[in-house]
Length: 114
Image (cartoon, rainbow, N blue to C red):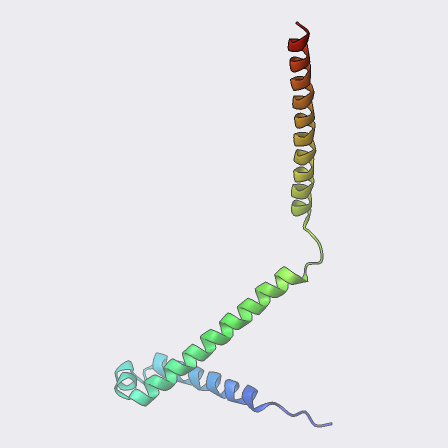
């Protein structure tokens, strides 16, 4: 079975290799910035390639973050303790409300008897 590499992968790899070659040529002084900005077509190609790589990077970061958020099947120990604390507070609030109603009935009942 022959492995067939998609054309898009080859195109992206060629763009990355050409960008690396250009950066190395610029760092060594073979290509200067003045020559690049004078040639409008090279500038547009560089702008498009940088934009493409930035968009692909943003997509990859988004996929990584969404995978990390959705892949966890349950809650972390911290989240579990916070949920337990919320349940405890709800129980305490209900107990306080019961006490307030009992105390209110006793006061009202006591006042009526006098």
